[in-house]
Amino acid sequence: MTFRMDKLIVVFGEALDIVEGEMLGCSTHHGKRIAALCAAMGRKLGMDNDHLITLTSCALLHDNALTEYIRSEQGGPHDPAMKLHCEYGQRNIENLEFPAAIKDLILYHHERADGSGPYGKTDYPFEAEIIGIADEVDVNWHLQRRSAEDLPKIAEFIRESYRFFPETQALLLEVLDEDMLRSLRDGEIGRTAENLIPPWVMDSADPRLPDTTGFMGRVIDYKSVFTQIHSTGIVEKALAMADYYGYGVSERNQLCLAANLHDIGKLAVPTAILEKPGPLNREEFREIASHAQKTAELLEALDGHGLENVKTWASSHHEKLDGSGYPLGKKAADLEANSRLLACLDIYQAVSEERPYHPARNHSDTMAILREMAEHGAIDGGIAGDIDKALGNQP
Ligand SMILES: [Fe+2]
Ligand SMILES: [Fe+2]
Ligand SMILES: [Fe+2]
Ligand SMILES: [Fe+2]
Image (cartoon, rainbow, N blue to C red; front, side, top):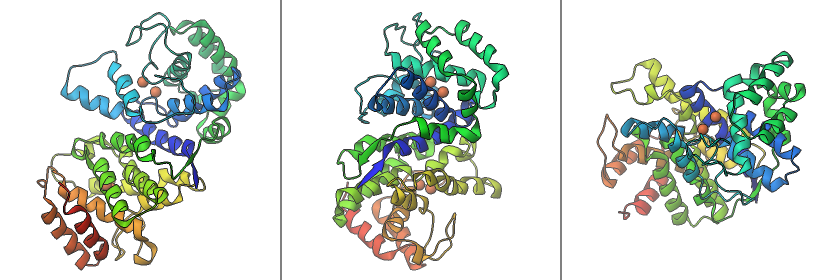
């Protein structure tokens, strides 16, 4: 079975845009807009599909380290050049094997022709500069709300205000015409990106998949200090359960992806609420619970691309067998085995982690809570028993 990796990266980029919007005031669909501009420039240069896939994927993921960067700045020295987000962003995706061998596009996305970038380099890959120039223009000009009469001012800005190589400036100017500008608006950008980004087809039974996509859970975890090991912990346990059940590689991989993405909606919940030190009021609780709905909305775009299971399992992780869960209040008949498993593992991980309102718990204390929930009909008792057997002997 195959699936569309490009669709997965577009969805992940969409969630990253929400973070960049919260932290830096970036526009909606910022990543998609940059990817579309990069694809248009790459096509103009006659790039083949493998290069276009690599370039647009890096464009979508260019600021994947923002949550981690802000976090590290809070605990360490200030980094005015924002060098670290380039370094972390590159490191996060080091296991993602792109079809073309262009390296360090995220590491050098803020380098400039005059050596004024964070690493002071002037011999960085041209593709990194393509991402950089598209990023700068969108950040400064909010291209989603520009019209033809803004084009001369934008062109002047590209020529005079940035320290990019003249060839890159000329390339962007050539691509950014009236039609292109119109196609970058919020209502159009989805279709534009779809037309310009070539399909990246992967085998869902590729054994490298857990490694190549593991960064997604890590990036989501960085959103809040309280959940720094949450998604990665669930991924680990989901893989152990897949092995316990003897799943084939494809099902194991899909479960792993669902575990990585289950809390992607948390990227859309303000950090101030996720990290509120005291008890939450009703409105704040509702806001946190809304992450499950946001996960479902973000993953909707995976439908029809070989990722339907991933969408369903990840979106159902707060549903309960008795209908008391959310966002849809699904009942037992609507919840198949892997949705139930992920729901159990989410609870297992959350109650065993240290949180401001409860200490870390060992396996038997965690299992006692799961057993009680199973007795009340909220979660699957058989699966909880399997988790006890499979995880009980782990260190
Ligand atoms: Fe950046
Ligand atoms: Fe950006
Ligand atoms: Fe959740
Ligand atoms: Fe979770």
